[in-house]
Amino acid sequence: MPTEENKQGQAIFQWPIPEYLIHQRTQYWYLVAIIFAIVLIVLSIITANFLFALIIILVTFIIFLRSYTAPRNLLFQIFDSGIMVGERYFPYEKIKSFYFIYDPPAVKKLFFDFKGVYPTISIPLDNNNPIVIRQKLLEYLTEDAERGHQSFDDQLETILKL
Image (cartoon, rainbow, N blue to C red; front, side, top):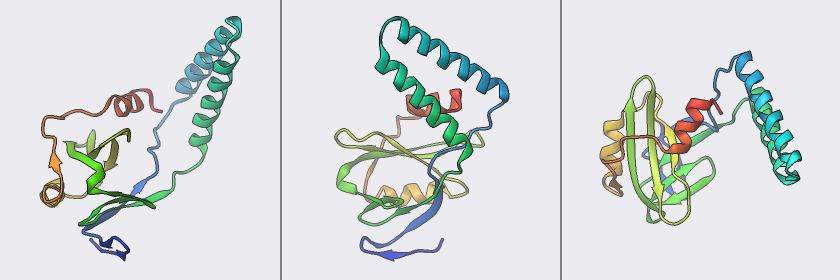
């Protein structure tokens, strides 16, 4: 793997990752999504909850917009001082632990849990060797070996194709 030098030092591992996953959706999925959105909007108008109606309209618009735009490719990098996702740098002091879920071909991801209020991030492994990456990360972080499942939001994203 090629490495790149920057202000964090030399990257130990790096690979491109998509900004978000693109799911293959059928016309039936879009029909169900539109009907569901319309039902929620009607219910929110009946209950005079206009803010909720606006939120449903915005979420629906964003989902459809993401369907027609390709995700940017971000560079994920592991340094001896932290990780970098695109332009966002996370030092190891802010990361609580990491874990892998490796069940090809369904799931091949690296997860990072943060201290504080940051959400868990998931990084697709693509064709990278998780054993080599795990050995290097163990030098800096603790592994949460008991976490053998995806987070709820990752599971929801996969099931609902969001």
